[in-house]
Image (cartoon, rainbow over all chains, first blue to last red; front, side, top):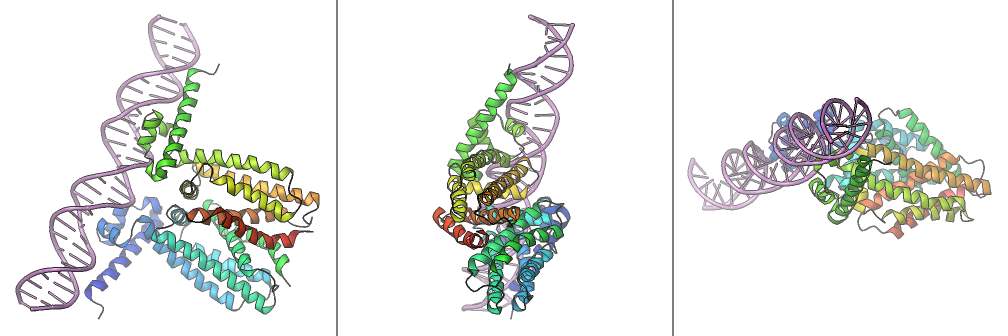
Length: 204
Length: 204
DNA sequence: TTCTAAAATTGAGTCAATTCGATTTTTGTG
DNA sequence: CACAAAAATCGAATTGACTCAATTTTAGAA
């Protein structure tokens, strides 16, 4: 059986995440005091630190949920890509970007990115790096798929290309979340413009 | 005349920066307490906050010095680029990367990057964004130069290409400073490998 | 059921960045 | 030189993330 202790643990963890997500959304990351999260989750401050090493890790848990959803959504595109290199890249990129602000505000993204650079060895820092790598791998998989189909030249270094595309998209996304007034549509078209150079170079 | 007040101000500012730079280097960013910086600079805590909005801005002032040096070093390459697209990009990128750890440790870079994402509207956040833009502009200038010389095709969208190259390099640099064990040589060769795809595509 | 060790919770206390009102210094005017 | 306004300095008090030793709860053996 699943034991009382295990059940309580799962329940407390869920309450902490729910309380934190609500407060991050309403008050912002800085505005959400640990004391308030603890009160809302009906646990003590100490318990929160028993579950998470620091405030950033709580945000990290929420970010991971989001990015994993994005990765899932991307699988479909890799499996059945549009029959055109430019569209294929744009569709995958589009899924990433459109989903990105579903649960996380720009401020939450900024904090998450900052923490992952500041503390690359913390649990969240490592998880974030792993998520970035998964996204890179998914783009590489798309390119490999396009090479199989014959839409991308076989002699292209797919691994390097995938990383290049991811890095550029990611950097554009970072700039995007840094400017509150930046719009998703502009971000997508800027990335499309940059990818166009690559598309011309790698198509058969 | 330059007034007592103005002279004292400049002198205090210099002392704060010198004290902070020394302590950041010796104790790390987190380890350098504001109280210690104040003591070493022979000013009070309050005075430090009169000159800088927060601890991050002090680091920001130091980072700006460094990046401006890098930009200066880059001018020479743009003026007289190597007679080969791949080498031209590699030389400029190389200057950026080799200089980067001259005054700033990886930990200082991590903190600086984190702060610039976390607080994009703080004085340092805006300065950092401006520095990134200047680097992008310099790469664009190099490409424009290569187009003039006839080494890069005229019909290439130089602005988009420059941004693409900068974004990729910058993202690689971020990953580099996140891993203490990463080596400069590996970073450069990874970037060269990615640029190779572009070089093949844009050369005449 | 009773008891003990292990696991988990708790919140008062610590630490360091940042604030802010009182105090001091500089400037320029008469 | 004397003086008042402006500019700058100062550090004690505030704030909020995080720690840790004491306490409570659970598991499971006898």
